[in-house]
Amino acid sequence: MKDLNDIPKKEIFEVPDGYFEHLPQVIQSRISKPQKQERPYFKLVVRYALAIAIVFVVLWLWLVPSKQQTAEELLAGVNSEELIQYLNETGVELDDIFSSLEIDDVEVDRIEEEVFGLFPEEATLDEHILQQL
Image (cartoon, rainbow, N blue to C red; front, side):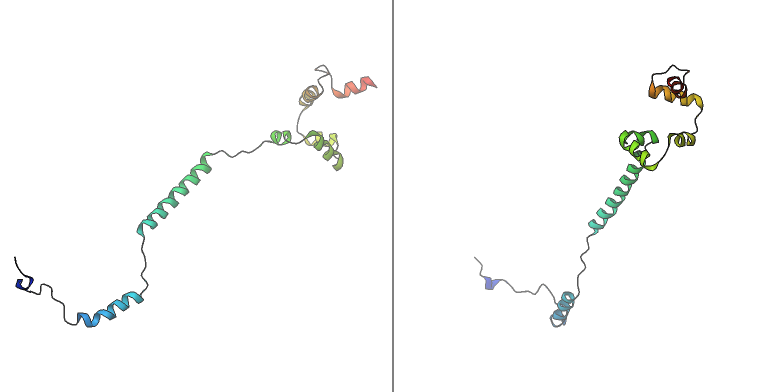
């Protein structure tokens, strides 16, 4: 068996001249500088996530139809009693409403027939009122 003292001692590594004299200043300079922690994966994730979110928002706005109600749908949602009360409070007369509409006499007769449903097709509301007097 060999003894440790029998192993020859060789210096395998060489240290540059003045290395240990300058080592404290090098370490101190590295410590005093704030190290910027770079996370390149974070930048990529944010970049692609933002792009995907924008694409989804644009597709959603383009593909989802906007619900625009017609006048008939809006009026269907109004309670008839509230509408009558509003018309009474504002002083709007039926003649004013009919004068603002652009419909012909045939259409008026059809509306009267549909609403009242009691008269023959050729009779109008005015004729019915005159008959009762």
